[in-house]
Image (cartoon, rainbow over all chains, first blue to last red; front, side):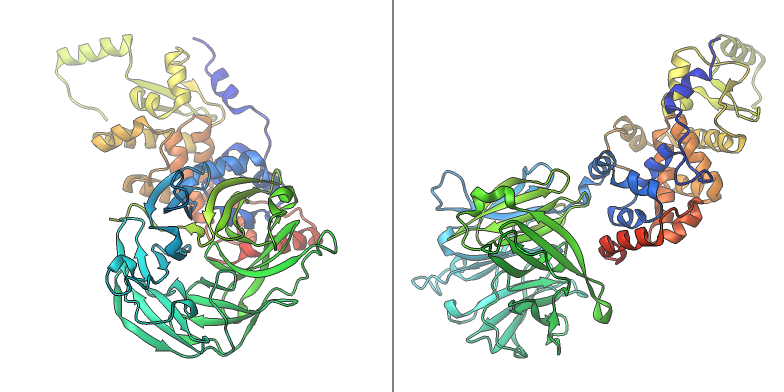
Length: 392
Length: 186
């Protein structure tokens, strides 16, 4: 009989390397198998366990294997763009796979000329579509009403009560109340001296009518993207961005403005590559959290607000090098990247607002320091989408 | 498990056993012998399947020098329990796509099987499963350990895995700052 111990020995690649220290309990390949099954965020923490764990956990081969195994945990990217081949006369809402860029699901959302905004955000399984009021058909047809909600799981579109308001002086935010399973739409009107709130149920229908909310503590111009974002059931509004971030916050669940203004990260951002370079500060919702964004034509830096209440703290999350996009950025008046999601493997999805209606969706890979263009999109929409498409 | 059989039947079994036994005998590093169903061993372990197909099975006990008797007993126990639970049609069809399919939650009996093990026994079983190419057992044991790791601080992890912190204070502080975001729960 052939020697039976030969076969298994060759399976191991007998390097005898131990994990961590000479006393560690596991061989490296067994440890590798275990760590592959641990959620990505904990693994970032475990890089501080010891040097050999750090080198294992940050090795590109491990990162790739982990990403492949946990691919289903990643969000989809939601973009609103023109339907190709229609001469920009029709718009569509698409959900893209973050790894391949393939379209997982798509919906028609009507003529782009009527779209003002498509609001989808992560941790929100509904998409708010805001249309221009068509004055010729103002009260005649449901599909000309300004507000509707799309459920990407079912494709159902529900029209929300719009009320009578001045189209040009009203803007909307859409976010999920942290504790309850409902979503709220906030409406600012006139000079934004007052807000109204509408609760939207899980299926997309409205619950009750628009109700008044307290007036903001400071003058607020608009709720446009980059100035207002919703994260964790709170609407954050960038009041002032000269030299820093000053932020007013409205709690959707309590329907109250927070008494104090918040301030952005104190850490000084890296200065622009050259003194002529423009800089910009904005807010974004990244991985479901509030993010402060500082961008120049050469790089974008992003901090996330971690923790909650008094313990909340800004943590540096990523730096995206944009210099490679010189040709792209030359046509941009100001650098205006909007980060959407930092993947478990460190890649960053962001979109660039262009002039007019144009925009592009990009993925940045920190390992190679390069960006890949994933899709073209309309100005009004791109975000992470974590809702389940399997919901019936 | 001895079962009374008629004389003719016993004779028949012995003949079959001589020509083609339906169990294999495995020998742990400390020389203990364990018998396991050949069918289950071949189905659950790519290494044992290769040895059975390649004829490198020793009737007097196939040496597994890397596996201690406690771990081998657990391996054999797992194989037998798995063999008993297999009639479920769902399991049979799912086992076909084991390698490509995403991790399937442990069955109730698998959960109980790993829950009763000590840390050391669990770690030994991971090593054994990895060594024997037992994909499902590796999944179940690693899943258990990864559950244990959830929510643990690096200090607690060092304790569980018996790892010495080889960072200097300064190095640790630098990495902690860089990864500060990861120390907050979602």
